[in-house]
Length: 274
Image 1: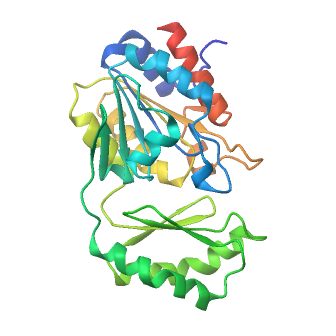
Image 2 (image 1 turned 90 degrees about the vertical axis):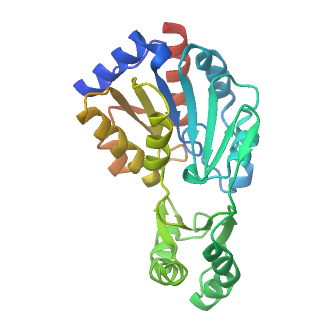
């Protein structure tokens, strides 16, 4: 299978630049929904085997591959099976943590996270949320998931205001996603993490693939780079559980692929072409 053609002129220019200048290029990827299928229990998420195989072939041909995720970096490395990859970095917790060449850098979480961790169970109980609502502790952030409930969107909207109040009381913010609300420190997002990583490197083409609202800041960062004359390709990984792709992401993407399988096929096609 060949490389799919982006639907925009900017995307086609970005892809052409990546193929022409691979040693200066960066491929940046979200984890959940992009490299790993979305599953009901995030602890069971694993990178698609075809994606890992494609990265093994592609990463040595590029300037760098970087995974940008809200997960702890060490967890992403474990669940992704990334430990042996070349030219590979994981920016975890939206860039607060970094894994590279087996070395993990992870500063302590801000105190507001501990306070929210203590108070969140009582808030959920007081809110009367149904069975299936649960908390994922990410260390530097906490995520409330509603995917397992009978009416995940209704429960999500029910929780939005009380969670925003709790987060604000402790200096945190709420980041919405697909049937999840994440409480985390302000000033960290995938756009800032990706921008800081790219600033360490000579300018070159960038391809970024993501699937959810948390990837919009990365899109915005690359749109700004394009405005400054640096080519980029924005890829949207569509849902893998029968859901439509996130409209805000799909509308801004240069290329739409069919979930982690489609991402793996794209990465493999790039490796073959290069």
